[in-house]
Length: 279
Image 1 (tube, rainbow, N blue to C red):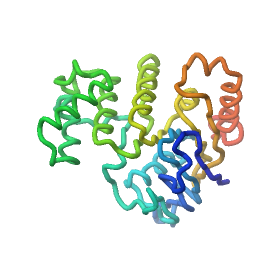
Image 2: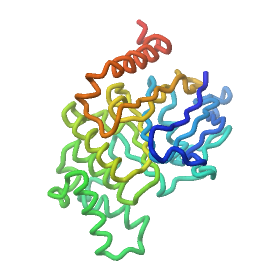
Image 3: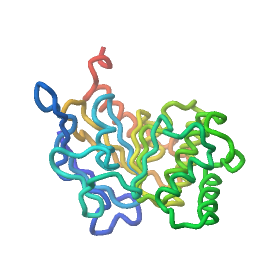
């Protein structure tokens, strides 16, 4: 089953050309027994400034889907277009924050962010680079930890550094691969709040993988629910139109919250349950 996602929840969604467009996109890997289809016939549009969450069971191709946006994977059928041009390779207009941080542990928080700026904007003066680094460390509340190495800070602080590094070069698309999955509940909620504040400030487009329905309902404009693999597709798209800025307490008191939540639970654990889940 496939679906088309046309996102219209943000003020700038009226532009003629969507920022991202998936056109009949599929991806299969070669195997000795023939091609193994991971994704098949993906069609949807994402407007600039949207916050999209993607959910589905393990192995349904969520990371592969976002890897076609980052440029880490190439479709074997169809295409993914950014501002009308096919995505061919990774680029600084699309930055990824991984669940495993992907930071250099021997460098300080400051130098991990500075490394990204040096790579993308080498023409800037040292003063300009420092100002950008400190601005983004402040944005995630890490000014006091700027000179600490990655081995000296907590998991939540590491993820803050990874977010600061990604945002410091002002990407058009921020790709988050289950960034809060390994964090405790309190830290996770704090970072969700910070992410929304940063998103409202930066106005970038966010594509985020999550396994947490409540997280998606708090953060996203739309929730893309994937069918099971192989040959996974988009089974359903939920519109999450709670007003912004959002209060976690307010939306959890809204009856529509539980309607959306039950819809997502039904999709994941009844209509597209894994065998293990069903048992």
